[in-house]
Image (tube, rainbow, N blue to C red; front, side):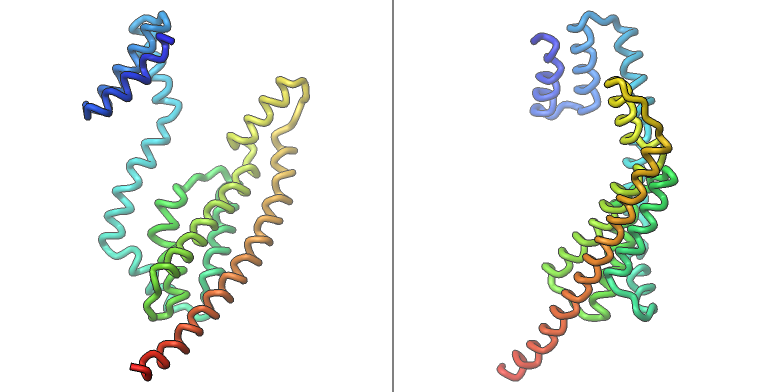
Length: 232
């Protein structure tokens, strides 16, 4: 149980609002000492963990960059671009983005997803395609944003396993080989292609139904508005 002292240090440190970085480092050293490790071994373990997960720092740096772009009109430019396109619908935008994510996932490219594309670009474009200059209710906006986020989830989840060095495939390969079964990464990646195609087809149907739903909803609201105005 003494090896769990690091958890106690983290809880108490955050509860008393100490510096989070110092709390985590102290918890790491306390856990290491409790496990019988020396100072250099603990530093080596911390350094190895940081190096292995250094890609997480890209996510931290990405957020302020997106914030600056939004402050300077990124969302407005995305909306303006969609308003100038004829035939653009929210469902088509989401489907196109899903294809983009599947292709980039198959190539092993991780582009940040929700914070870098959905929030500042895809969602505003979908909102503009539905609104067409009208004001949308908060409930409708939330539904559009949720559907936009699903395009990222579908595309990333069903596209990444087509990349032979994907973490999921490597995990499967390791588990299978430990169980005595020899598997090939290229073969597993090929088996992921039909699943990705099926997911794309189902998403296309779902987004088409979503477009129809939004059209019916906004048409009904447009019909009700004059009636309410005449009744006043």
